[in-house]
Length: 249
Image 1 (tube, helix red, strand yellow):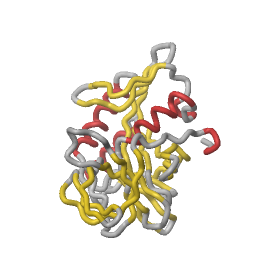
Image 2 (cartoon, helix red, strand yellow):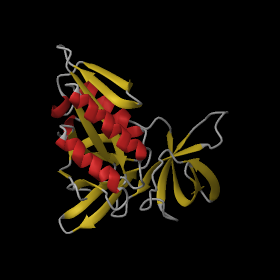
Image 3 (cartoon, helix red, strand yellow):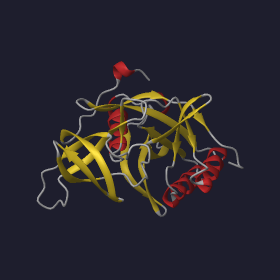
């Protein structure tokens, strides 16, 4: 995967710089714009502990809607090591959809049919790909915002909060493999400093175990870094090596 062939996906709203102040609840934060304190929607259900830091620079998207309670969406935050990290967990799916349509990663080339948000069992999975012979590939995406400096380099970790929904998605992917379909989980790493990706048993041991068991069942595990630019948008930048924890992780 080469940066020169990947397209930036522009942000759908006008970008507004600001500063993070505090998180009011799961989906609303206090931010400051030009000295004025306003509320912004947080389109990410994770804890965002490394990004939701008082005084941290952020990029907001201005939304003009009479039915919205908040005027802004929180899109980017300054990463601890510099550069920009992606907060908006809705964006990776759009970025990946654009990549599949224009220049798919080699792992997912050869599928002319791409469907979004397809029901399977008790879940909706992000993508269903199908080739001309009718062979199918199910894909579920996860947005990653957490990273740790480890002896071998900075490693992104998922999740940053317990996720029963994530485990349910893994079970659906395993079932897809059992019926003969291809299945994959794609971790979209929105941290510019991350060199590797791994599960996070310290936060959710059950998900870490489920991810390991899914890989043994034939579910493919991929991680891709996202490049975030406050003026240009977000693009799929590079493949990141995956480190999986063993069954005791």
